[in-house]
Image (cartoon, rainbow, N blue to C red):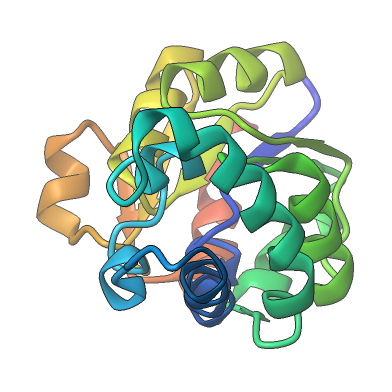
Length: 205
């Protein structure tokens, strides 16, 4: 039987990054003079940064704005970010089962790495800058049997990898929407994950 490998999304799955993302968008707005509704931005986290910035900047300025955002992020985003309920316990449960933890995220990978270090979340592999189907390619390459995420794009990624798609309702979507997108399991939050993992492992035995 393949070694147990569990994939997790980052934003609004493992970490509540909304305060830091909001602060960074406000800083970018102040610096550039471009209006950004930061409160709206944090209601739709998941897709790549450039997708969001395209709502506020002309197409020819999006990449430059993204580069500046990623720099500002390091000054504004890490301190206010905290693990979501059950995140640390879920990672510990995977470890206790002899499994590997892999984090597959749409976030810029160097900043994702700093987030995980700041939060004290141990992981075996991290791949950033991926979204939907491209997450599936990384999950398949890493041999993940399960992928846990809060966004419909995470469900797409899990299914593209042939992994069990576990949705959590800590992001912008409720249980009905995650199920409708193809989630195999929907949890209220990661506090429910350790018990689910025990049941999943029992079924694999």
